[in-house]
Every structure is written in C-alpha cells, then in structure tokens.
View 1 (cartoon, rainbow, N blue to C red):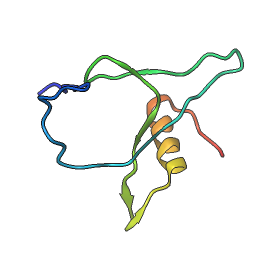
View 2: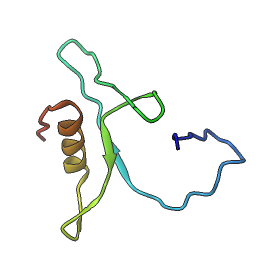
View 3: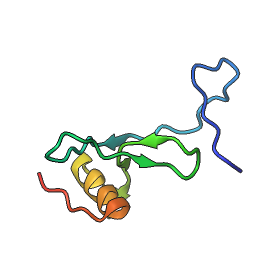
View 4: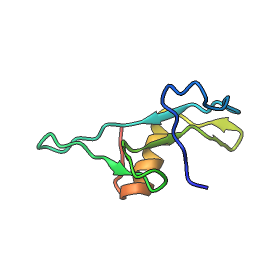
Length: 79
C-alpha cells in the first residue's frame, strides 16, 4: 500500500504511535543543501530518521542522523 500524507485533513485517521525523529540540513561549500527524494511518496526531504532503541537504550539525535546520512548517501557525519 502506498504511503498517504495528511496535511491538516480533518478526515485523517488518529495516529497509533508517536516516534521522535531527527533530520539534518547538510550544506556544501557553495551553500547547496542536500535533499533526498523519498521512494514512498516522491517528495523531497532532508536526511534523517526516527530515533530507535538499540541495545536497550534510546539512540541520540546525532547517532540517528549519522546512521541515516551514512545509509542514504555514504557520507560520515562528525559532531
């Protein structure tokens, strides 16, 4: 089933879970921003993802962003 986005739609179903997320704006030396095109809805987005539980601890925002950027575009992120 394809993803359906609801933007201020009063008919939208109630959420069944809340998951914290993190995203990052990455710029090159020329001021261009890195955007990714989503496969599920063909919209543009910044690299990021939901904060998951790894080894019984909540991952930090930096580790979530680092993992997502590495997986999506093979760039290592340092703080």
